[in-house]
Length: 557
Image (cartoon, rainbow, N blue to C red; front, side, top):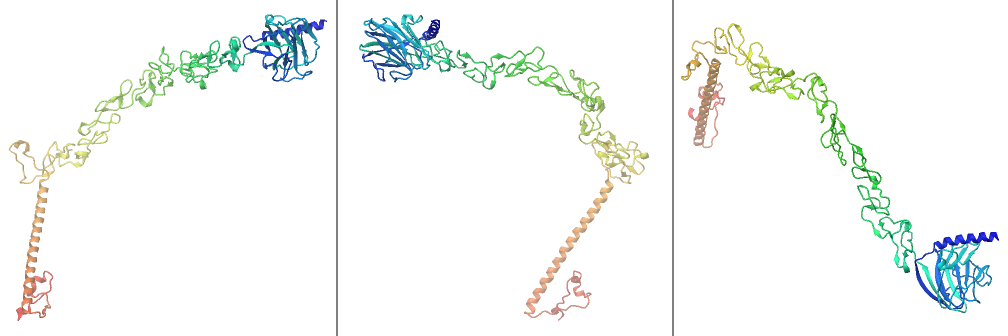
C-alpha cells in the first residue's frame, strides 16, 4: 500500500510539472463525432501534437467519449504505443479511466465512477503527457491542482497525435490547439519576433525566452536596431574604424579610431598616449600632451628631441630643442648640446659664439685675424684658406697673392724683367719703374731704351711737362723692323713689275713669228737653226729665260 502511494505521488509530481507547461494561447477548432467509435486515419478527429506536452479541449455529449494519445496515427486494438482514456457521463456510463495499449479492452486498472460530462453544456478539460509513461487529465478549473485521472506506465514513447471518438452518441468537441511555431496570442494570429538562436516565442505573450537576435530589440524583438549597434540589446558599437560585428560588437581586426583601444574599441586611451594602440606620446615640451589621434606635439619638443611627435632623439653634434646642427667648432669638436657654443673656439674662417658666421670680406683664417692678399680687383679671398678666387694684382704671386715678385721681375704674374735701374736696384713690382733712375746709357721710366744722340720724343702741347724726358719704349727696335719690312715690300713690288714686262715681250715676239710663218711660207716646213753655243746674241734675251734659240731663216736670206 505504501509503495502504491509513493508511485501515485511520483506520478502526480510529474504530471503537475507538465500542467505548468500548458499553453494558454491556442487556436480554437470545433468538430463533431459520429458515434461509431472509429479510431483510424480519417476518423472522427485527429490532431498532430508532436513537440507539445499538453492540450485543452471542451466536449458536450450524452454518452461516454474516448480519447487516444498515440505515437503513430494508426494503432491496433489490443497493442501499440498509445493511451486510451474514457470520460463518463451518466450513471450507467460513468466510468472514467486510462488504459495503455488496448482500446478494445474493458478493464481499467485505475478508474473512477464519476460523471464528468453533460448532454447540454460544454465541459472543459486538459490532458498532459511527458513521454516518459506519465499521463494525466483534469478539469480546466483544476489546471494547477490535482488531476482527476492519472496513469504511470513502464514504456517511454512520444505522443504525436490526439484523437477522439464516441459510441452510440455523437459528441461535440472544441479543441484549443497549441499555436504553430512562430505564432502566439489569441487564436495564434500574432507572429513571433526575431528570437535569439531561432527559438519560438512564448505563445501567450510573444516574449522571446532568451532575448533577441542580433540587430533586433524590444520586448517582442520586433524593433530593428539602428546602424552601428550590436547584440540583442542594440548596444552602440565602440570607436571602431569600421562597422563593428553585429553579434559580438568586436571591431574588424581590432583596429580602433585614434585614442581608443580594446577588441570593441570601447576603452579610451590613457592620457599621454595616442593612436589605435595607445602608443605613449613622445617628448613634448613639458606640460604639453600630444594629439590623441596623430601623436603630434602641439608646440615643440623637449631639448635633445625632434620630429613632429618628438620621438626621435637628436643625433650627435647638434644642440637645442630642434636639434640644430653645431657650428664649425675647432677640430670637429661637439658643441654644447644646450647652448650650441663651441668650447674651444671656431675653425679657421668662422666666428661668433656658435661659430656659424663667416669671416667678413678681406679677412680669413683663425678668428678671422688674417687679411686677404692682393687679389685682382680687390676681390675677396676664401674665408678659410685666404686663397684668391681670381688672379693676383700686378707684382704679386702665390695662391693668396701675398708674395711680391722675386728678384728683378715685375708685372702680371711677374713675367717681365726689370730694366737697367741705377745701382742694380729692383724695379717697382707692378709698373717696372726704377725708383733711383737708370744706369748710364739707358733711359725711360723702366730704363729699357738706349740713350741715342737724337732720341725720338713725343711732344704734346697739352702736357709738355708730363711727357718731357719720356721716350717711346722700344722705339729703336720698332724703327729697325719697319725699315726691314719696307725694303722687303719694295723688292717684292719690283719683282712683280719685271715679271709682267717680261711676259709681255715674250707674247709680242711669238705673235710676230706666227704671222711671218703664215704669210711667207705658204705651208712650207720651218727650218730651225739651233746654234752650238748659248752665246748667240740673236737669242740672248730668250736664253736667259730658258727658251730654245730659234733663228728666223727668212731674215738671214
